[in-house]
Length: 416
Image 1 (tube, rainbow, N blue to C red):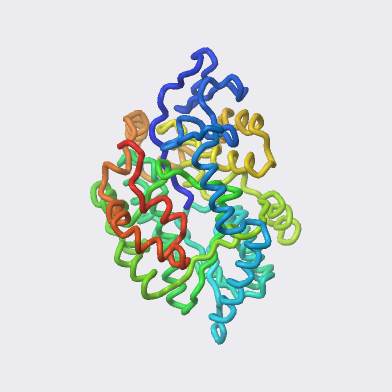
Image 2: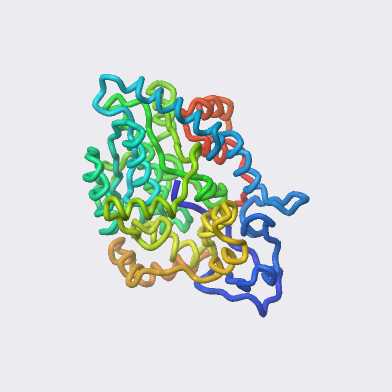
């Protein structure tokens, strides 16, 4: 899941002379020991993160959750390797006689490119699936074709009509909520299910790594089909026809009757994003696109402009905290980088305005209005909570992502 939401950043309780504001984000003293607010003793999540709690050792609940997942999945340990080896055998057994035995979603980014490479190394016959919201960077598109042609892997691409995709993006922008990219995340998830059903494939492999990326708190991230329908019905200008909308009934039908299993290999195995980048570049001529999730221009706008400037949120602390937990970056280094403004692609805002038909006045008005929260619009959230026992069983069986169960099926502590 790449889109996200963070509640408005409250005033810092530290020395105001040490504070800096850049585009809506409180940039604090880059010296972690002079920041003036409470920070996790293990990562760089601070007291502004939604629903954060600290234990007696000063460790945040998100670090403890990562510990729990590592123990549960045996990440990078013999336990995890053995469990995943058994899954590979199940995939091969289920795929006998079929053209493909698994689906791998690809974006041109590091994780998905590495995963499709590893799928071939494991002796699998993957079908790569790409959801094109028509905002891809040229580098991402080139990466997809370089890697897949080098591996002789087939590609299935679903392209949403650009005016339709833009109308949904525009609706979320005008709604004033943070989840401007919700349609991409949900559309991708449903597309994977649709293609798996089309080719009678029983397994979908996803390239997410909680160890390298962390798990985004719910307060920064919410999307479901009802949320998209409701906002688009209110702010949209044309009907949804080519967008793969996953409603609650379609979600349940896929999990209960299609029985397609979602596997995240990097939750079981040792994984280094930096090593993966180097390998991909050497073998395929793959190119880095400049930052986490910046392989898509809408995603780039979301991370480097929209969240920081309207919501005072900077999601780089997810990956920076993950690197601190992994020991590849010190807390001091991560905190200093976090309090440096993100790179903004030249002309990105102008491109966003022009493409979505948003006037300068509209843009300025939305960006200056108080942020809205996903709780102010219709969602399936209460229904997910009601069905929590069922989703627990489905998550344990890999029929829905465990991260969905952990984030969506419990009452939210995020204020409206």
